[in-house]
Image 1: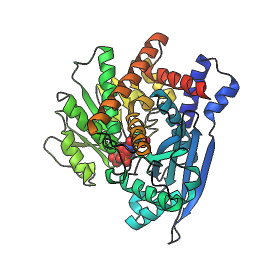
Image 2: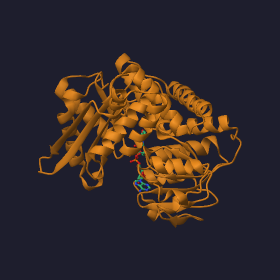
Image 3: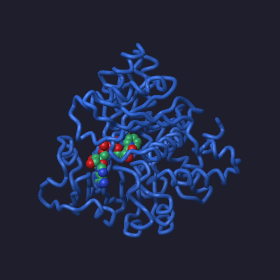
Image 4: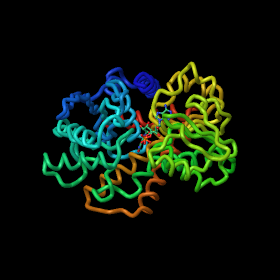
Length: 403
Ligand code: NAD
């Protein structure tokens, strides 16, 4: 993923005639924090926080709890955050954090101690005007609330503005839970309008039916009732029904910590995680982890369009081959930017002591997402480049202008 991000930046930099020094600044981190969090029972976990760029505002990015988290992955994700905040033009920079852990193997008490321990290590480097973390894979408002509480205990700060993605009762924003999925809906809706394809009935699949994927599918079902969700997967496997799955029912099922491998319903078949890549689809949505599609498996993809709701699901080389075959890829830094846009709204509400209505959050999110999508679409037309290249080009130009 780091190689893909760096190559994309270098390509954009060449188009913009940037100097070697400017390119170096875009590739390197401002700071990398790496530490061990040791629990009272002696269990030890590696923690990271990467701060990539704060020239446009405080570092901003989620904290991921996953057993495959490593230095390069967090660095890549921090770099993507700088590009994303620049693309949607909000006054925040890029950062990312992670802990190497499988949270399913921890008790509730261990999870809380680990979350608080992360903040104890990182506290000098974060703050409302320094670095504002948020949830990511396997982290949620409950974990963020523990982190906020720990930060307040250590520093006395009660603004709640050091973290976003909090629960509503602890200063979170209405609409943050669904923001990434909703942003994806606004993006695909705008792209189809711009492509003159808005009336087309879609057959689509979602890889990764967690926070992002489930909200996306539920919102699509409301907005485009004729679209068919034919497959959905989680880490246990997938469910498939050519006649269409009910996104709301699947979402309810998943919210009770159930696995798709145990799901039973009329007309539903079980498929493997890999099968979803090979389905005949109008739209394939990636909402799990990065590094899914590479040069070797891209040839099996039959979808007409790909929506990258996860960060970095398609490698740079695979993306080029897919684009050559006419597959349109809506890039991660655009498709999943809804989360950071509403995180920005949450941070503003905390700093200004405001509470926005859900309607205001969703309306302002739509304005941001449609504007960013139109910019990417127009740039891709003018330069005759892919949506992915256009998005990176806009972001790099904005980033370098403030460095
Ligand atoms: P989540 O933990 O809520 O959900 C992830 C889902 O992916 C789970 O259902 C899990 O079972 C599934 N999964 C894991 N491995 C899989 C595999 N190999 N095949 C199929 N499914 C698999 O996480 P999330 O918050 O929904 O994030 C999903 C992706 O979206 C991540 O890449 C994240 O970085 C990105 N993202 C999230 C946000 C946000 O606001 N949550 C914002 C921007 C980007």
